Length: 402
Image 1 (cartoon, rainbow, N blue to C red):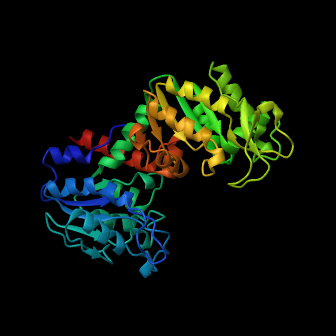
Image 2: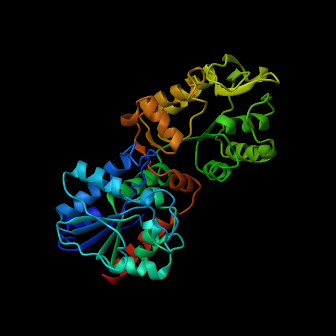
């Protein structure tokens, strides 16, 4: 995908003295007192900001935080804790500016944070007048918030339409590169792991991947629905019987291409859904009517691990069992370590997936960890994200005007 990269503009000396507006993703978790409990997104946003400062730009950065009501600013909506944490990490003062839409004064070498952009009336509906006002604040707009790339809002899309220059920051560019590597030009075999509680929430993803991948590993409640489609009994396990025909269609589409959806040959069951439930390993053909399937069995996990170790590319979204419970974590643990040990390029995304990666300490062995939940899923569905579309269009316009 052809977009203008902010790093290239900096390297070419096109940023010096310019007003740079960075849309970051600083939507961090906070406790009831407003204290940031996890600052990964703040840390991840700093390289782009520092790049702009080092290039001699006048820098503005904004983000959404939480779910504020447009036009009704409350103290809990404020980016003040974020500005304070970023100031600590960068070792510099970062003024926080409210009511900034009609004008901001910022000098080259200075960094200011603009208050929660989602409070501005018209933000979520991508109001054109608001977008034009934002665009007028800057010479260069930098989109560096992949977590919002699937939303066409004023601070993510509209401003990119009307700014003099619109480009991708290093975080967004890295996501684009990883996604292209994993899905557009994958090294084969391409193996996708799609797991979670419901087929319905990921049915379009499964259908899209069925046309692309060599192996489609399903887990969790999704696997239970596929087991039903394969004619197996699943007891009282979480599943969606109404989508068995859809699951069968995915299996048939894969089979027609000489690919496969591996169905578990053994499972780990319990009588109740609880951390202290007794775990029983049994063949997939022997699930009792009162059993809950809470993980794949060791035989299935070993077979899937072997496939992953010989893969060329791995896309991972979702743990394959209830990995939060020690008795039912083996499947996810085995798969996580297989991905870590594989020579494949791996890309992983989704909240529960990131939790598993952290739990098993394999962050450095995963090729790319995506920061965007909804955006990552939409890419897997085969959708073109609004941010990618507008930045690509602006790059084409710039090239034709040159």
